[in-house]
Image 1 (cartoon, rainbow, N blue to C red):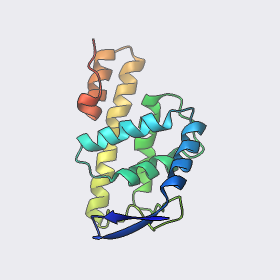
Image 2: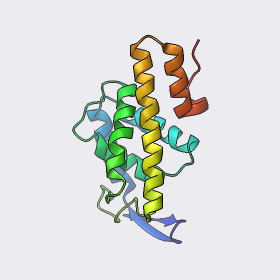
Image 3: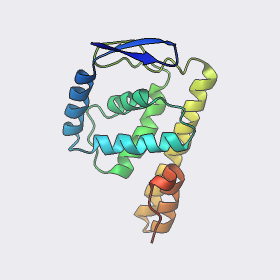
Length: 158
């Protein structure tokens, strides 16, 4: 166990980085190596859209949403996470290494929870539209929707 500073509470957080590495490595392996890139995409989305979610919380949301689910491809995986994450926002998610309590405790008012759900709603709608456009062969429109989600982190079409 180690202590790391928590700038939000002006205190210290107990953690076990080695245990976290094991947890994420096992989960990434279970998803055929697709979990880490998916998390990176979600972090890019979060950064572009107000950075409301703390990084570790977002990682744990993804870990919980995708527990027992197979990532078949990135578009459907992202849409699935946006969709299912909305249901997890108001519930406690604890550190899987056994340290600390609710890592989402910073979403501590109805307004903050609603803002988080609204961001996930908007992202889910864009992801669904992108998938529809791609299925219809309208790749330029699909790329525009993905671009709206990821900004400069996503390549332009053509």
